[in-house]
Length: 274
Image 1 (tube, rainbow, N blue to C red):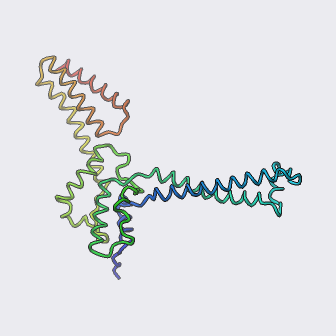
Image 2: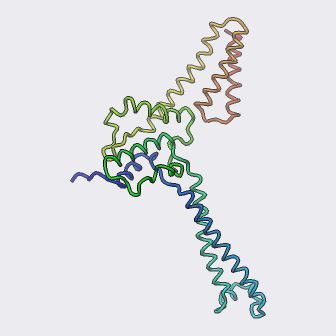
């Protein structure tokens, strides 16, 4: 029996499973912050009550051992102090867990604009062609600023690779890619591109560009004969080289300085020999 076509949330889950870049969810930043504030307020009340009970028990000669013995506090059948401690412990566990979860949520990145645009188009298309997801508007309107993604295909990538993903691939898809039905997922109707293949081709293009830049500087020195002209070539070419390296490499400033120094030294040698 052929598998049934997924619908509704099942279809969206299939899309997210096939393309992790589509794993876009609500952050609920306001609601999470309010939850933490409410827990904090509850704990403040409990802390005030506990401080009062400790002070009140301290006035009772029969309870003078309480500051030194948890056993005595715990086994007081009619005492309220230990009950308040247990109440605080339960709230603290809930508060600390929520605090750590919120800390992790804040580290999750916002969806990439290009991925979110594809995601919105898919949601809109499904809403038109079938019954929309309920409740509506979960990813739209004011909620667009309250979204996160579990995985970013561009994290840790250089600027050139990100540019290919966010500009070149959408441009290619609008002109030619959408005509290739082999890329269209049968279950979700979405067009899927292999990220690894794109990264390999991008890296190959970067290598070609680096090689051309290095070779072009030698080529220019054959046509520029006067000393001042060569100095201008070195200055201009170094600026272009560093800007292109910054675009195609994820490197620190100190690394770029080392590369620039080495490249300048190589150009000076070529200037003297050509």
